[in-house]
Image (cartoon, rainbow, N blue to C red; front, side, top):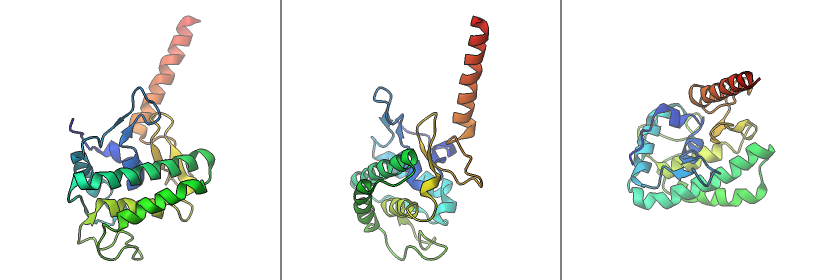
Length: 199
């Protein structure tokens, strides 16, 4: 089934989190599914990310030259990123045992990149040239390992998506207030009404 890659699907705050969030209802075996089961969706996701993540990417477009060939590495980076950052969000610190898998996956992803990366002010490199999606995923993940980013990684309490809280006072709760925040409000309103009716 073709996915509609809307703005909501890019509410993780970082390209790597938007990518980890392509596994829907993660942790719920009965409802979980993978939006990348069809590798062609990786190409469509990368095209949408070029627009919705333009600020993070410094305007550099993403490219997927062969989705079938790229899929195993994209999934490897996604899995290692989710494992490390989800654990960090739950514990408040990075688990050393999770780091080697992420570093190996990111190293493989960076091999797909061309040109200079990590240029001051342009971590994703020259915006006039497309960047392989795998390389961009690696840069996005690695950039979160430094500074205070780890302390701002959270899990949406409604959908279980990873998110980067970039708010000034680190008060962000939901991946998307218009979706998960409103669903939570609706549930709370429903339960209050039920309790009042039962009373």
